[in-house]
Amino acid sequence: MDLEEFTVSNTPTEGRSGFQKANNRLLDIPVDGTVMVKAGSMVAYTGDMTFTGRSSAEGGITGFVKEAVSGEGTPVMEAEGSGHLYVAEQGKKVQVLDLDRNESLSINGDDVLAFEASIDYEINTIGSLSGIAAGGLTNVYLSGPGEIALTTHGDPIVLKPPVFTDPDATVAWSANLSPSVEMNKKLEIGQTSGESIQMEFTGSDGFVVVQPNEEGSVTQSQNQ
Image (tube, rainbow, N blue to C red):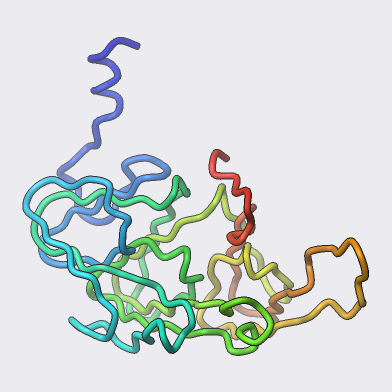
C-alpha cells in the first residue's frame, strides 16, 4: 500500500458520539466534559484536555477503596476538556458496553479501561482470595447508566453458571453473582497442575466473562 492509502485507511472517523473503537485494540472517546480512564492508558488526544489522577472518592465517584486497603487498587485518572481521547492497554482487545440505569457489572480491576462520569464506581477485594493468592483479586463494581470499556486478551466467551473459572482468566460477571473460591482438594507433589485455585459461580441467573489468557501469566497472547 502507498503512503496515501496507508494514512486514509488508518485515520479514525471522528464526529460520532459515545465510546467508539478506533480499531479492535484502541478506544476513541469523544470528550466534552469529563471521563474516567485507566491511569497511563492515554496514547493520543486532539483538542484541549487535562489529566488528573484519582486515589479516593471524588467528583461523584463513590466507594473508592484506597490501595492501602485493597492491597492492589485500580488507578484511574480523570480526563477533562474537549476533543477526542484515544486509550489502550497493552494491545488488549477493547469491549464497549452500555449499561442501563438498573444494570451493574463486576469487572476484574486489571480489565477496566474507561467509563463515563455518570457511572457509579466501587472497588472491592474478594476476601476469600486475599488470603490464598498474592494480593487477592480486586474487582470493580460499575453501575449505570452510562458507557464502559473493558479489555480482554483475545476474544472472550460468556458462560452461564454454575461454572468454575481460573481467577486470572476471569474478566467480569453480572453483579447479581457472588463468587466463592475453591481449592484443589488433591495434594500435589512435584510437578503441579497450576490450577490450585478456582472461582465458583453458582445459581441459575447471570453470566461470567472469561478470556483465553491468564492475566498473571508470564507469557500473554496479545496477538490473538
